[in-house]
Image (tube, rainbow, N blue to C red):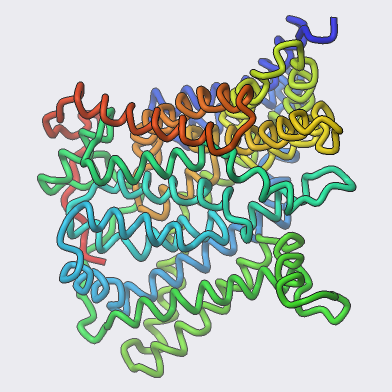
Length: 536
């Protein structure tokens, strides 16, 4: 029967996702991400080679680690990471970060204000989630540190304004990715724009984050981290890289941070437009049409690498002209910036290798078949079902782009956008939104997600601490989003469904405020307590 999913199919899908699940469970239990990821990769290699140790070893290294590091897109992201780390090191050495922190402490006088400023900056940088994570982190760390906000909370604010903002921004690398996954003959950008009002997880995550900051509500492990931060321990769990106390450059000014960041953003936008062919004489149309087309066809990896390199060149020349750094000091920042990015580079490499293992076991094909067979008579609940499937796939594989790349074509094969019945066409849009919302949700929850890793790097927070503190918040938003997709599947009205979702979300937050009590501050007993970090 077409609507049924066979137990054999579910079994194969589970086996294909087993390496990722092993890595995730081990990481959450041991709080050690490197060995957990490698064990997950090894499990994938053993399953692929049917227990042959030599074949497993070849598969792990040839098709996993080496192949991941040979992929041009992945290399571009790593180059971008290193370049951004160098820029941050330059700004710290020049005293720009310290000057901005001093300026902010005079204008932002509360924990709420500093958190809202972090959210505002995250919303403004909607071009790309990687760029968002690292830029917001480097700019806002001095501000949040002075207000004794935990690094785990900073990482959550960064993560919650990265993918959720990018997935509802028409001009972003995410919009370009979704447009590329649309079937032939479909206007991908228009599909993305029409899906925005139904992207409940992204919208409700932003609503939840802002409301909780204003009402000063924390729960789960985050509450302990914030309680510790108020007493001076902003880490609770040992950070991946300790910042060493160094003499602050008193010549630094606010513009020594702001101007390089503005130029960096400008260069990255230009880099992405360049890779999309914006400056090609063959591209026709008005300025706006060329701008949109270039973004939809851009290569974010190459564009960000170009832009960050331009940012480094400008920053070095700017500081030399200002005579706040010598050339030798600028060059020493290259090594410092690279060292700071070693942890996220290692985690990303292992996460990409783990994804290669699940891909080789046929995870995408099995999950796609499950979705294809799940369409039955209860068509109204399909958006909620697709949301859950997207959450599971994204959580297990650690990739949101890969998830909606698999599910969107399948969804549009099951639900036609050009159906004569407007209800069916609307349902197709809602299901596409469910694919994207679920992908972002799973991405948020997964410790092997690249965006989650970048957020930890941007906040200089212990990665597992970020995952464990963010998880209860992400699951709360996921639960309300699931109920909202159920409403949307039957109401088929964006405004009605969104209002219901927002009311449920705010009601849940007030309920949490009523039932929860603030915990006593207590550092993680499994990790040594750290002192307040050096000023950046």
